[in-house]
Length: 167
Image (cartoon, rainbow, N blue to C red; front, side, top):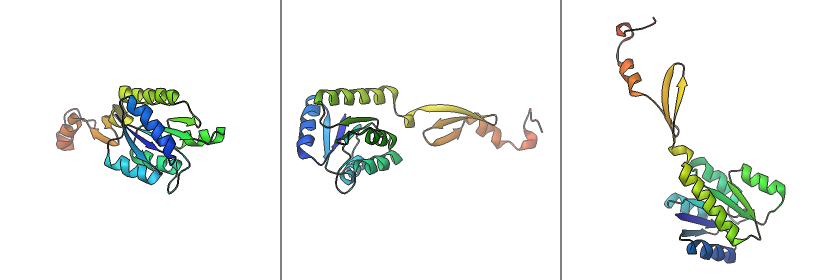
């Protein structure tokens, strides 16, 4: 599993890297939100640990950009410990929020929990759903809706030639 750690504090970045590497995770590092976006675009990232207060692009804006296209776990790790800061982070797309100073063992437990949930349940984008609209049953996969093959067969016949037509 690939984890991206995004924090402008090099000591925190290295400490988290050591703990998560010892757990067997591959680590990618970024010092700001812009770097994080580039890394996510170029690599398969399974979870992000994101600081909020960073230069160039903060963690909130980076999270908003990521949520436009990606559904992966994001854990906010911030010195901002006020209730309103936590609520803002969670409302902007974070799946979890940890305040600094933090327990490395708790962070590892939260990382494992998020990865377990996302891998066991799968992301919403990969699940198939069915929806009945106006008598037409459709399969919905991600953002795309496709009619079932039976509907395509029926739509080939002209209206007057259909059997069982109500018109």
